[in-house]
Length: 219
Image (cartoon, rainbow, N blue to C red; front, side, top):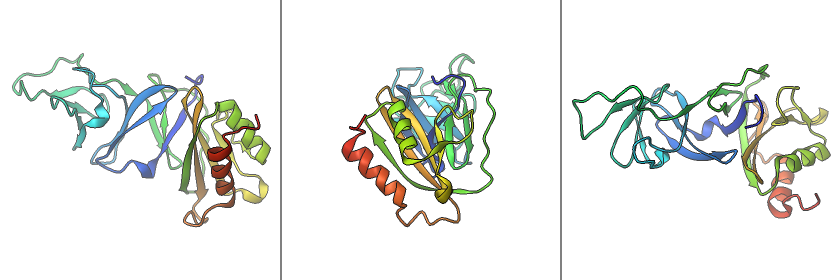
């Protein structure tokens, strides 16, 4: 994992209440889900019973239900609440889904691994709206170099190169990088609220075209 840093994983608007999705972050297969009351969870994407992907299951209230045998795991701590084949038996306290540290801010859901990173948090005072994502076959340093060439700069010293802001004339842009695999990065674009995300952002268009078609071939 990137040392002692929160990793932006997915824009908040892409995970609705009662929804579960599969993602990769630093080669880790994770299930991201939001309970009926809106609580976001990031779990290892395997049921502790038979290792079936939890992202194949469904949300039931404040729990996630495995698609295979219907074992039910509680939000927050991942503890098994119910085993349908043994409805009267209480599951042992050690029977849990593996839950990762999670934070939701600035319109993004952040992954913190098994131990929440202790880092200075960069708070954005302006609301942001999602403007699109693109996944590219390139290393994280290659994408970072590309952003520098575009004139973007890192947002704060504690972002580990994962959060970028537009240049002076484009201050409304924020770029979040998810190191998906060793040579795959997902780039998320956010705009401050007064910008119209429905209108294709010029720099985002440029990034999409270059990253998808050229795949940083200049590096």
